Length: 113
Image (cartoon, rainbow, N blue to C red; front, side):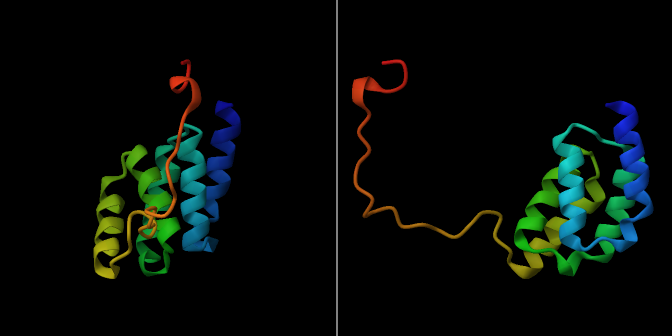
């Protein structure tokens, strides 16, 4: 898989200027999720992300931050976190009221019980 991911990384690197913030986040997430931390690609993605900071959706912001943390790109991680603070973007989804959901009963004492 190494040669394939290297070729994919080079092709993606050449197209970073064509990516939206969501595309960029998805690409960074995909490489990071696959454990492929191509330094040259992540540097190019980080540079592109800096230019698109105000265009990230909350989900894209979460995905990009996770991917860049895993790839060791601390400068863009700080920028993404600052952007989150500026806009008040929540790290998680909205609060959910579960008070009317009732009780969960596990028969047999739970898993393996």
